[in-house]
Length: 415
Image (cartoon, rainbow, N blue to C red; front, side, top):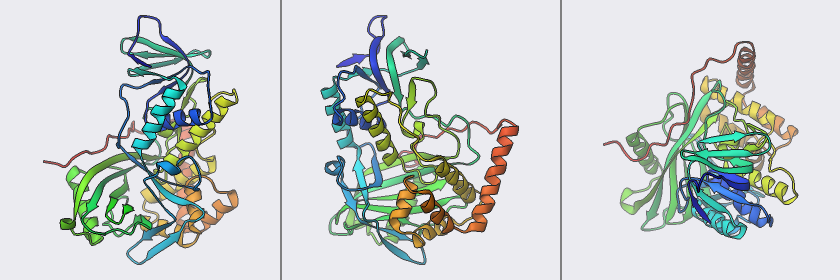
């Protein structure tokens, strides 16, 4: 059922409202249908109807779940490459997987039909929680009143972090006229790209077939590049891979920006408002990976509602992991560690599956200690001391760091 903006002066009454209809909300809708949540009045408030291929998620998980049939590709072997060495890693029993947005949006649309969801084509300009319910207002007045609100709209952290970086990237979907790619393994990180003055860069390759792949250039750094600089970096990476431009065409172009910050994202800003996705802390600060945590959040919300409990997921990552991320970001930002060497050592000195589970927040304390022990301890200790001093300063003197927001991605090339 569709509702455009406001109908009359009486807001729509629902049990659950989802603000934003992107990946996080789509996963929640699919999980609600999968767990047979019924008899709830549900609304999605978003000025846009999400559909088609507007993004690609890469993540790791175990095979044999409801995502299997939606994947574009998956790999049990991945490469981590530096100037000195090419590492081919077996990630079993995990897999590295690629999922495009279209099947997620399609599944969410089917879930909307099964659940009888009302889609409200409006922006949510105000969200007022009085403890008994949440009033969502638009530009023309009240839009709806909900028992609970799940808010996945992008937003900055509550306050700027001590380290504020961005994961920013451009990817080309390449279609080749002959076999150019090895579809049995993905390139997870290729650090042979020219490294920025401040930050880390790498390329990666996600092959769907021997003739079709996503090739991407990524930077972890404080500032975006120009469109021409992204294209130049991608062209240089294709040259590094030995890909002849005469043998392929660029179909789609993907651009993105993801926050990498130790600034806090508040997952529960009021009693009946819960934030999901990046706004709810699902983005791992040290890597930018988000999808697996969004999926966990959606499952927890659906299971809670199916059991008659409030739709409040647990923390996206353990507190100790958020601290470790803050230390790692500080070490990279203050040039206490070399970025490519830092990530290469993690994979050299740990089983690949442990590193991947660590980056996903799923390791034990003993495994975390093993991962920490594989880094350059003097450098990381210096970063930890600096982080502790920064936290103490923030407690004694309220932070006066300038406001920080995640900029939109750079689309297109410069004239």
